[in-house]
Image 1 (cartoon, rainbow, N blue to C red):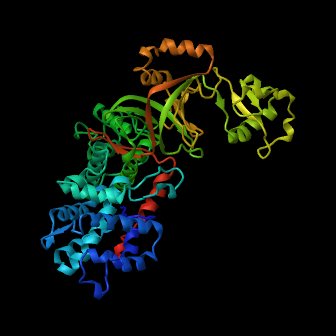
Image 2: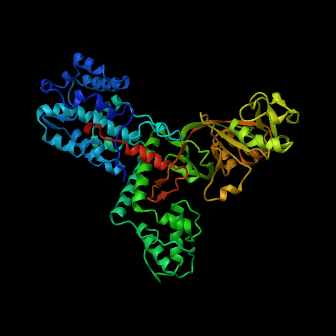
Image 3: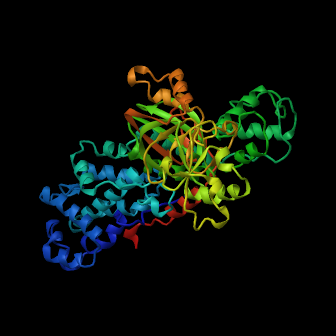
Amino acid sequence: MLTTAPSRPLSWAAAFAFTAVLALPFPAAAQGQNLKDKFEPKAQASRDAKRTAGERALNDAIKDFYAKREFKPLWFENGALAPRGKALLAALAKADEHGISPITYGMPRLGERVAKASAKEREELELELTLVFLGYAGDIVSGTVSNPRRVGGTFRDAKRPDPKKLLEDAAAAPDMAKFLENLPPDTRRYKSMLAALAQYRELEKKGGWPRVDAGPTLKIGMRHPRVAQVKQRLLVTGELAAMQGEAELFDGALLLAVKKFQLRHGLLDDGNVGAGTIAEMNVSAKDRVEQLVINLERRRWLAGYLGDRYIYVNIADHDLKVVEKGKTVYTSRVVVGRPYHETPVFSSTMQYIELNPYWNVPYSIATQELLPVIKKVPGYLQSNDYLLLTRMGDNNSAINPAAVDWSQYGPGNFPFHIRQKPGPRNALGTAAFIFPNPHNVFIHDTPIRSIFNLEDRYFSHGCVRVQNPWNLAIFLLKDQDNGQWTEDKIRKVVETREQTRVNLKNPIPVHITYLTAWAEQDGTVHFRKDAYKRDGTLRTAMSKVAYAGAR
């Protein structure tokens, strides 16, 4: 099981290091001074010389906060821990509910120190609790890994909340416990994940579930001792309500239970218990708990990026959703990047839809994939509706491919740009959904339809191919242009083969994420394969976190 703690650039943990003289073991001569004296200019200047710019900024934010309240303590009052302080310690003690070890925040020792603190010790603990609060709040809002990009280029950027605003909001909150509980902005989805983690921890505590032996595929009507194993396995996680009838008979009740299990694990729901289904059944409860912990962290990264209306793509689920006011109102299958052409995780805003798009072939694809074919197959570019350009995106710069001596060009000296014209052969199909981003990733149609029927849909170079692009376009355009964007209207535009841009009256946020575990509002818990092998990378990053106050 993961135990995480913050070890991140300019995080609250780093703050412990640079405020060691300020907030932790003060020299004996300073222990009798009040909170204001701890920010005395001369002492501050001496400490500032040893700090980074970021550390000084955090210290200044804390100083400014206390100065505005005339250095009145936030966590203590009348010589005892204030209700606000009690709520903070209670939240820290339950941090494990979020998949974060309470040790991250010095618990339970911090609580013991507060309970026994003298007046002098409370002066030190006041600032320590402030730092711990900033750490906990930042972790819950945006994740324990404060800069996910440092973990790997495929991770989402996550901005930690402003410490001064956090402190001001906490000071103004009439109910600190409620304030802490509501820190994750996407509370409904996040709370479903918390419930799932608690559920699977309870299953782990009870011993998990029995393994199912490998063997030939089990199907309805069969009798076999392994059928009983499957029934026992699905009883534990609730797909099978009760053991009825013959234990070793694959009956109708088991068929329905297997299909439920397969749907929860992203498998083809044919009801047959083959090698893939058995492999998922035999993942241990401990591993599922860890998977939920890892994905709670990802959910925290995403928490600040949602909205009332947005498009949500989960790479690991090959799925696109349009969400309005917390409810999924449109869904579609998608194809995402191959493991060696990973679809990145990021957020942007969709600005327009392009019907009959041109495909500007990326340089890497042009030189590594098309160029070898061009050399072998004369007329390949012309027969597949490609233009050979000397200037990117400029059709007027097109030249005749037959006039080029292709033998002199390779990936290191290719001077051309390749562009595919709109039409039935176009790799982007009939529609592209554009949301500007540095990855040059977008959602688009495809002329290859069969891949949407596959269980694992990792086939693109990083972009997201959507199964029913016209339906998605009609849905996104339904409230503009007097409802003219019908299927018939789109068909007529597509038949012209002329590039047509349709600006969205209401641009919509797009969130592309990678969740290998999540929970629905009704409590259904889903797991997916980690095709990109990102869980292990994140696990490593989270495990490096340690409580700085203990160092």
